[in-house]
Length: 335
Ligand SMILES: [Zn+2]
Image (cartoon, rainbow, N blue to C red):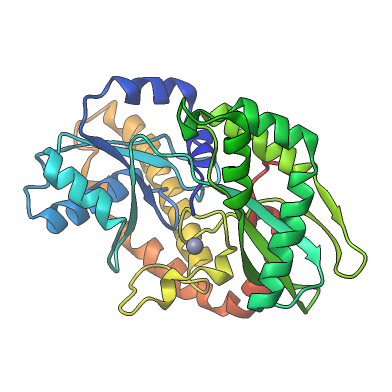
């Protein structure tokens, strides 16, 4: 489950407005493991897409976002000028993964995703019965919350004009589902509950407001602890916000060639190193270019070795990586 809101936050507003002006068909791409070496990434994306749909890699357009300061945050790239059935095929594929690059394809008009967040604090087991109890406890708390009730009944455009406020509220309550996730907190397995609902509204701002109301819930129980919403996760392997990096399901897919929890940090480091090196070479070439002309050949070189080197070097960090990773980096700053 990705968050369109969080992904769009990573793109400057001016750039979003420019993306708006680009003609359909168009779609977004997220690149895993950083995008520091822009031109290199640009080339790899082109090749991956061209290979997938078997077209000439120069026949379509690829909008490149500015490099993120930390070199690792997933940023939206815009792909355009691909004929519609092919563009749809790529969006439907969702993941294009090779040893060189992993692409996540997202529709240009990303629908609102009904993932509210992760409730933690209940002392329930990760079983069907535990999930049912968690769902019922959360459902009862939501049902009794007048702020959420009022908000859903007044922001219910997604249910259609003929649905009454009462019906909308009933549908919303019935749509509450939870999925357990086992987290390691202070070396202890802790079960948290990911909460999904049917979004009552198609308006992004209203949806964000509703999520904030859920963030105010504190569900106290006599027998099962007290739970509240945690910050959303931010997987560094895929764009999802419903699991932390070590629990990303993608590396378990048969034939997965993309990043894993063990390699992602090194890939991001390599991306940052490549970005810094490319910028440095650009500066050198600019000053050298003042006297002469041939400043280009050096830029493309040199980018392979730092990549490979950082990847090898990063392996030793594996153990510490899993446990010692700061929670802040895993989560967004929504609440
Ligand atoms: Zn993931």
